[in-house]
Length: 336
Image (cartoon, rainbow, N blue to C red):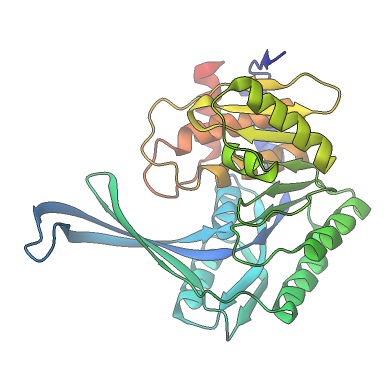
């Protein structure tokens, strides 16, 4: 049986919770990237090839990958600490500059001479993405580089209220890394949340919450994807048992999300999005609000509902956007 979750968080309660958020410090460990956006307009097709010619009007750079999670936390007034690896290059310099400007902690970031900063450039015209250009090395971090990130993460962890592992499948996480950091988070009684990656199948036992999307969930089980709600529930319940986590949040795009918790019926939370312009980074917004909610002692249901509101806001914006406390309060008021 699937229960339909109601909004358990009134606008007044949300405002109180958001004030608590400002006292939180959250550690984000993961694959750091630089996101670049080139905006322009298309007036013709190139005579050289059947492709649109984009006349550039403006360009912006933002923290990307797990750094975008830090950006989401900062926009809610939370002190974010980042840990990961970037290159000793101009893209790495630019990323650090952006993070420091946003008052996001960078002391956990290592720099590699062999592993260049991952850079993703998106070209947009008329509110649509024309093309994305990825610059990254096929090489993976060495054991020594991975150990350096782990060491810095373990140093920061005792001073934080929650831990997020953001896996973009770029080679930072292996089984030893996650087991070591989960052991430390349990020692300090710090909730740990995971955003897994379909290309890096790991055992997430020890996590407080794991947030797979539909494709990641079925891939982890070695099963084909399915549109059937019964299969979603079966997959979520099986992964909850396999990973022995307190919560499993299965995200389903326009179908919302389903929260699984041991000993309780699954709760379906419908999508709150009114308009969808861009889903880039929506998962980063969800994991940020979930972590803040659990760190502020919200129940899993209420934290997931708040995260769902946040996702509904951010997909209505263009690019890897963030959500503010004011926008979140207004969304809860509108649906309250």
